[in-house]
Length: 308
Image (cartoon, rainbow, N blue to C red; front, side, top):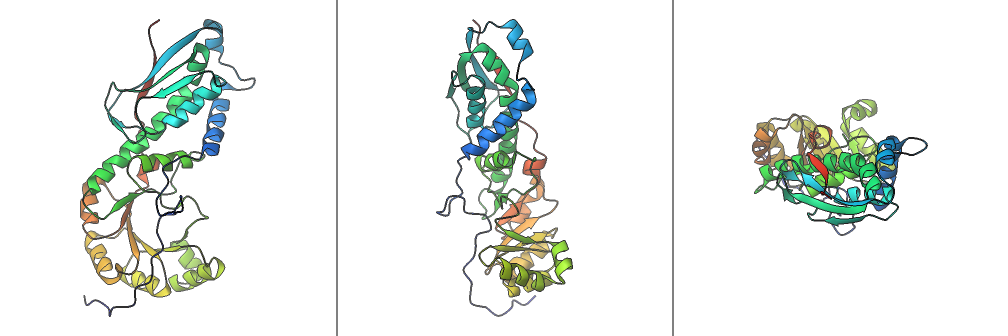
């Protein structure tokens, strides 16, 4: 297929939101959000009035112990700061938390990830909430790292989506970053994405784009496309990047050749680790994978009290 005449290249808007202000996705966690999530999770576990009936019945209030967070499987760790916050809350700041690993580290079965010392009741009260969050985040990071490794040596980066666990988005998207992936949009507010239903409601890709641009002139606009003709229409309308949905590698290669020098391109839809290299070879900028956050198994991590 003949390539269209060259056009003046527009400055690209980044597909992924700049969370730090200098072009780098900030790997840090929003500590206010961490505290909110931890308090909600503990409230769910402790009830009203807040209590751990087993620990209160079996362990003297003054007893202290040291425990280790230990990996029970190989993977990538994420969420140690979140686990530390759980222990800080249950112990009213009396526990000390020493991280042995760092978020993003590859760990092996049997590795000690952190050591925590404090009131025994507080350690055991925190145990399940800390592990629920840490195991979930580490599972997301481990899954993401498999995709990042598969794309190593290509220009493509693996992206997450909004298919997150309600209430845990900030943690799961942090875990994606820890695993070597990149966040797409954080919500409906930071990037406009024109999908099939928006096109139908507005009448066309061009009409939908013009409505978004007129209403939110400073927001980057992505358009979902399924054909080369739609890709060319979206670029002509002014789209900043395209979500190429359920395209074959052959069709993606055509789209990259036609518009890839003018917009960022994202492949999505039924992608697997087995096909990741083929899609990356087309020259797209991103592969978006909802499964990073909606289908990652946990990484098994345990809390073991040291023998007294």
